[in-house]
Length: 316
Picture 1 (spheres, rainbow, N blue to C red):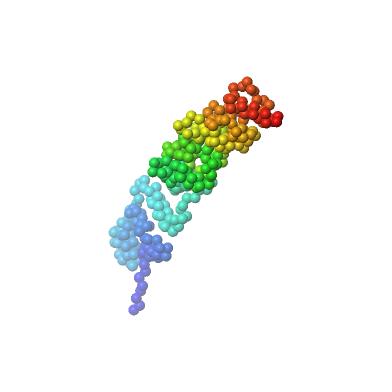
Picture 2 (cartoon, one colour):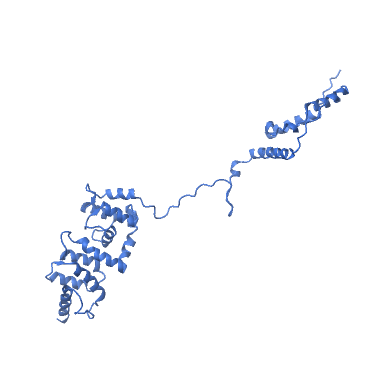
């Protein structure tokens, strides 16, 4: 007698088909489990299968109505279904696709990284680095002396007799020629924002520009007198005065070479501060032919004798 194959109930067939679909798309079944009030009662499926098998109709009495959703839960049901769909969809979306990209003026949806610090030509000044730079040339007494100064000039590529060194000393407010104290170094380099050799070299153009400014040059010229003189002397010896005048006025004063010759043959062995200051004023106001020189003016005797000496030379 042939054995009849049992037909599966509609509910069971739907469940099998659903399981096959889930296996095919690799979505776990538990992710789609509905709430209790959405699930049909197990008795309903059993009753249907009994009817198809021809069992007595008393089974219908045992069929329980499916649990209906409580009132006011329809929005929650929709939210549940939407969350399940979105949850499964996001499982197959690459993470890189979820990264927010800035488009136009829109802000990103994720927390943006802090902007990287822009590196400019001038980095921040470091007092600690500047102090370490100072100790490369300083001696045990924490002073850059003649030997350290020579090495310092060699490293920055400037001769000790270069006028840049005078302008640098003026910026550092150095008291003695050939010496930089730690306090002078830190104060001056801080004002220049230099804590290494490269930064100081990049400031050479600025230091040279101070010589073209009338006010700054006047301050540098006056500073040079106290900077170059011996601290136990009130005047500047004539040889040092000639060297400093050559450094400051040698290229700009047309009468400098003549005045230099006058100092070499004169009886003067020192130059005081008043004479030093008036030489600059003389070079700026008196013409090269001395035509506008006022003999009754308040010029020092040194300059009166120079004008007289030069006129004698011109007539002879």
